[in-house]
Image (spheres, rainbow, N blue to C red):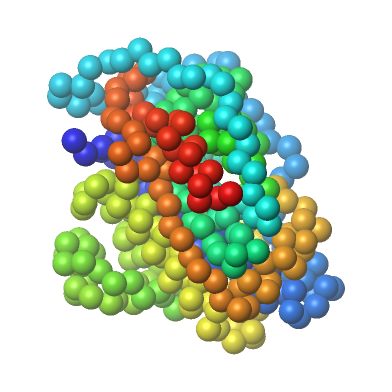
Length: 335
């Protein structure tokens, strides 16, 4: 059985601005090299959040009523009781966890759902980058609220609540967040002159391209990242997101400093973070040697294959993870 979920606003999850990784990590690589004063001036262009609004009981009731999905034939409602016990925090030396958020805000909404959640774990000791996609339909405990899809945590309480939810369920302490939206994704791709992606025959037909390596512009890259009808739905979609991350990172590493300066001038004002400038500088100094010398990239998806099941709960099609088995995989990879 393939997971389909809703095909409405959340279907735009592919918009999930995977380029955030590029923007964030390359800030470290380029700006720190140029100088502290310039770096601080450039980082000042970002949008910094120190306090985020949480959803009221009335707003929560409305949210739950509006997010009812069409039940699939044969799907039976289940009363699922999750283990509301937080997992142990995964201990790993020399690892920085930055969570990239692709926000899906609808017209009239000040904050949408986090339909793309990509954890970039930089292991400075082993010179390794682990990119972990958390599936938006994971059915988890949202501390202080109710059991629901993981992508609802951001809509209800912003970065802080999303971080608490990931820590509670999966034992990962997030060091910082960067959030971007649909428009940022397209703009970054366009400013870079497109990205090269190797398309399968099915993907090429869907996009109106030819099979093989294609240079995708902003709108086409967005369409590529949104594909859900080919392969295993959201699982293959998150894999496409990780491919875009890799393509963006490689392209930026090859850009001259002058061109990167212009790119940063354009994209930094579009990014939102909960980190302070001093934190960004500190992480940058730690990550800089790793990026400069090149690093291995490892990819992971949560829930892991065979470590979940599909379920129908609270009028939603969800992915019910085996929390302990997924925590163990994360512990093994991230420790």
